[in-house]
Image (tube, rainbow, N blue to C red; front, side):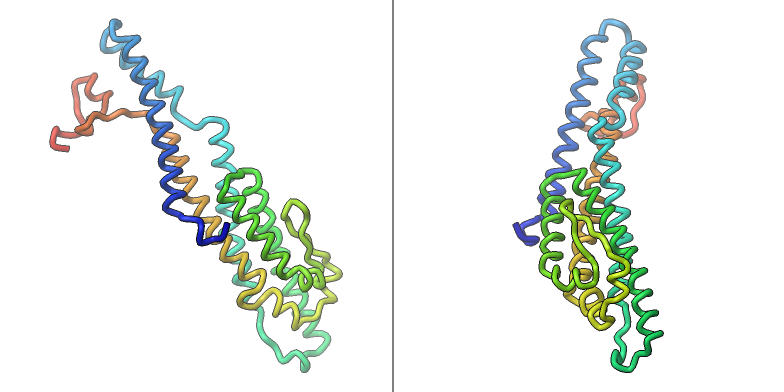
Length: 246
């Protein structure tokens, strides 16, 4: 499935629908408490609802893990985009006029940027693999394809991809790499690095969407409103946050 086949709107709607479903379940739980406690008096009902809210409030163990993974993905993807920019900013040189000292310095500078890139890339990939899901699987597949398309040139620089989709760098082999090839393979438009940067931006946006839904889900069900916007706690205690006109 290509990138054009991924609709961010559909993805967001699916996530929001999931959150609403959880909210409805929590609302039903509050209703159950009301029914079971109706004969105990207003204060008892209020206490029962508050107790139920405390139980429902917060995330399930699975959702808490998702929040952890998506937070990791978001941070790594954001940092990775900065690494990509640094590599794309590697300067063009008059390669045949460079001294050995200049060549060594260029390689070392590039290697430092590559190591940062690989570190953030691997953290992002591990986060997506841990979380799973169709969207993350698509991104992982695309990242692997980008590597395979540039595999021959990357391997000549000591950059290889493991079975789990993470990258590794042979430091000594990279230091022997042709400086002109380093710029072409890692620091040019349409390169492996450039393509990774674009997907990292998408992965960050997807993580932010999921985190937004999870954060809303965490507090869903703590309050239940009637059609005019009145909080059920206020109704039980005789108050109202909103007028009947909303």
